[in-house]
Image (cartoon, rainbow, N blue to C red; front, side):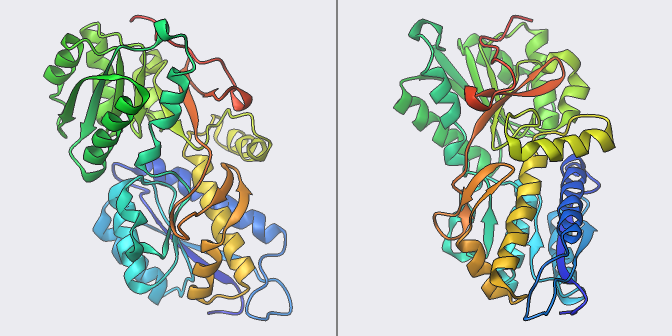
Length: 375
């Protein structure tokens, strides 16, 4: 490794279907590197003084196979000691496979795939809950309501992926555990031809919808629900509504869509104020709720390198496994020593084009609007 700087690398979808996530991630990673260097950098490998961090980044075009090739180049050509990963399961899984094979630590912003908690991925760290935790804040909120205000039947919409199918199974089990009835479960296709499934969800009497699918499918689902006047008490979306593109495309028809996550741009949390202020000043708009997780990835990675005191990849992995720190998304630990983290979850809700944190109340920037007003 060069003694002039600490090389860290990232492959992100700066183009392609996940580009909104990638651009946010790059902004966050660059900011974290700048802030570290403003403090002198990191002291590693018995260096008498701190040396700056240098971030090498590559565009994978939203293609998993390109993400893998980029990681190899970052490791062999640029000699990076850690990879900062992306957000979107297809990319993160490929990043995880490649980094595990090459024995290089990976800290990635988001994927709930339970595969990443397998022992073969001990080089992988995700500061987010697995899919088995996604429904918990929703059910805890619902069970805080007067019983007469709770939904009667839950509809489930999933994408045709491992994460989608596993999410459906977990949501059904959680609904039963929390005392709710399932009205139906449907698998959405890639094409926007799911109108029949939405109508059948309405006809089955669902008054609450859990969904995990792409932003494109989420936008279609909202437009079609409006067209047929389908009015559940809440649309609870995973992933589809994370980006500002969701609200920009739908306008006020995105209002009241609610999602679980580790962070939101309006969250009442002192650790987040400065990063939101910086983003707002530079971009002229509030960030989407993936910014916090991306910045937390960089915080965790840089903290681990600093604690390891070396560029040795195994020692950095060991430091990551012992992470116990507060980030912009709150306190972070990895109970298994790898994989998904133990981290706080909140509910965010689109209101008048702004993504507010609405639950729990101690970090909320606005009151949750429930039930959703009719179209």
